[in-house]
Length: 118
Length: 284
Image: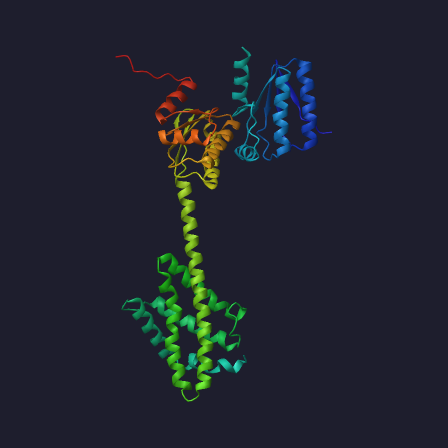
């Protein structure tokens, strides 16, 4: 089955969503990521959704949930690279992702996570 | 209605084209107040007369929506369009068709003067046809005017939502005019697009030019702020006039999570500080 790769960089986890997100994939990502956070003792999670150009309420909720789960496991989540159209859709859906940190690109997101690490 | 009913009309239109034209032009010119007819107008009249004749010949005189009238409709559409663009009044546009009536009626009287029954019938026939055509002209005229208005609206919308870069990583969005849903969409799109292009991390939304803020406008503002945040940019709302501050509180709009400043200058200072720049008087 198709899976979204989770890369480890020191104590950070990097998730790059390069394929069209469907519901099953989102659920398995949620599973994998929580497992990896625990296993790798990760302090931060960076989710790059720059390749994602379609979202629905389910995916939006899933992103929000993943961030909440990571926070409980004491890892901060930054969502980076959101497309303008995706941002507008999420806002129109009323999913403003409160509590989720955001950054324009991977570089900025990484800087944000590292600045909080200290 | 049989084909013969319109026969006398067709004959007039065919045999007396030139005098009919002259009469019509006279009526048109006296109604519009101008002295000379240009070639364009003559051309249009000539085409309309011929189109009318051809359509009447087919015998389908009751329904001008039918395919027999396609040429006439096409011609009238073009005329209405061009008049609407040139700023002619609806009256002038309608007169183009209606002024043909008198010319035709007097010809009809000459030809059918001895047969009052037929005369009445023919008069009624052409009258109803011309009425229909006149209404059609006005309809098209109206539609083209509406197109002009909506195009201007579109242009105004694009003109009034510029996103300017104030500093490396700092954008300003001066909103002018009322924020309705459609405007918000355009504002949001252009702001987010600019954030991507410039890699800005701070956006200042200046509402000095927004005359009134109600709950809907506030909601649209908050939407814009939320969308910018999702893209990783912080928003500052500036240009809040005292009156508007009062309104916002009275309405119970929650702006707690958004940085707000009274003037664009204050917001810019805050933005510079957030981005790590230092401002001060230079040492002499």
